[in-house]
Length: 217
Image 1: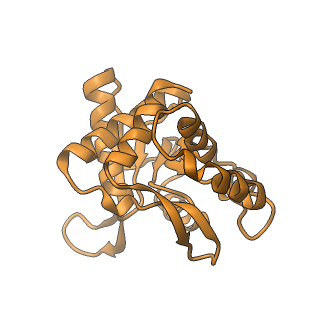
Image 2 (image 1 turned 180 degrees about the vertical axis):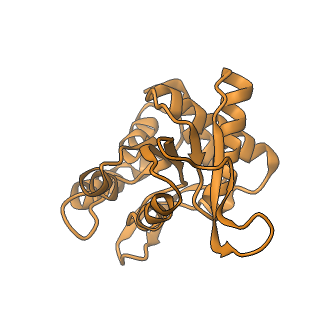
Image 3 (image 1 turned 120 degrees about the vertical axis):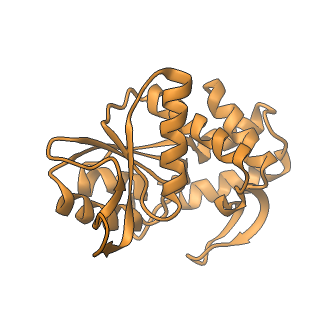
């Protein structure tokens, strides 16, 4: 496992974002772990998050002119990722995010940040992907704004779970929209991190592997 992945898993645990136990999800499934990205809330945490997203961006050799963070959770992620790419790696990309409603005064428009134009390559920045709802909402907005190409999407964790069908939301994004979704870490990475002693939680391994066998995609 790459070092930045190990560090990110430690970071999630330290931040109280990655929890182990017994959790009933919206789907009704009872999971042995839970990811609550709402626990991030400090300047130091969002700065570190941007660094991990930047590492993922570079590791997958993504090429983009603009990072787009769907409102609302994607906004600070896109901004912090753009800062990390410029400050730590000398990669200067634009950032943009959508409004929930089109502004009809001032500069107007639906997007804030670097203006999107025909031919631009866009990388979407989000926290997690469960059903692909955020992707389905942002794509029509992008197409209304300009004829852009979505080269990739980065999320923090791929749960690698089946949705309504046999495939995960990440797999469906590629099949339905042609968008490659890259996660900083996956559920398999988290299991491996426990096995290797990167984080504690060996007592949860049987339940996690059973859950993966039952619901994994």
